[in-house]
Amino acid sequence: MPRYVRAFAPGGTFFFTVNLYERHRMLLTDHISDLRAAFAFVREQKPFVNRAYVVLPDHIHCIWTLPKGDADFSLRWQSIKARFARQIPEGEHLSARRLKKGERGIWQRRFWEHMIRDENDFQRHVDYIHINPVKHGHAQAVRDWPHSSFRAYVRRGVYPADWAGGEDIRNLDWE
Image 1 (tube, rainbow, N blue to C red):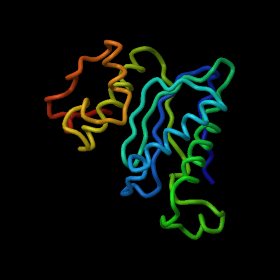
Image 2: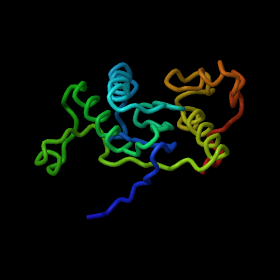
Image 3: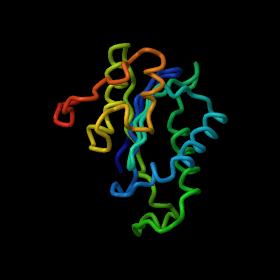
């Protein structure tokens, strides 16, 4: 069995990618109010600052900063996933392994995290988050996608409202 090593940095800032198990489903945007409620509930129980985010139909990217002395983002993700899954009607494909364990087939079991190293790294990941709906063909311009923190960044003067709005950015290399 693989052994995953997670970054341990109490009070750290992290970029996450969390995917649905069945990537063709549109559960996250179809049930956006349930997802928001799951985030709010968990944030109330185990605080974190959601610094930037985008919710696409089949995956989420976000940047969190954890409280001083706290490095447990895994528990927060487990709680968000479980709370959201309880709100979704059953009907997804379930593997024999998931059936045996009594699991739902909503989320991929794992998630990807990256510890933000500095301000430049932070800004690169914020840009990546906000450009993601255009990159995946869900919007023509960043400002057109409703499920992201982009508008809050515009209000704070970080981005102009037309940032990455007219270029053909889907073919750019974002890695």
